[in-house]
Image (tube, rainbow, N blue to C red):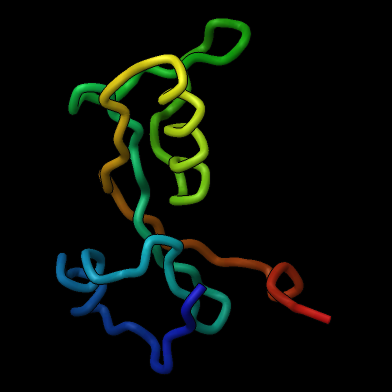
Length: 100
C-alpha cells in the first residue's frame, strides 16, 4: 500500500480525480486510509450476494477480496469482472501496519 507524503486537502477529497487516481489497494496517510471499493459483475451487472443463511451481502469489497470473489465465481460463470463502484476513507490502528 502506498503512503502519501502530505495530507489530502478537503478540495482533493471532494475531487473525483483524487479518488480515480488511487492505486487499487488504496493509500495511507497518518493513520487514515483512502481507497476504491469494487463490485463483482456478471455480464456487466452487479451480482447479488447472499450469506449462508440467505441474508443479503453488499457487493462492495476492497481490491484483494473482489479479485478473490471474481476468481471463485469465474469457475462457475462466464463474463465475471470487477469494477470500481465507490470509495472509502477510514481511520486505522497504527499497530495493524507495523512490521518486525
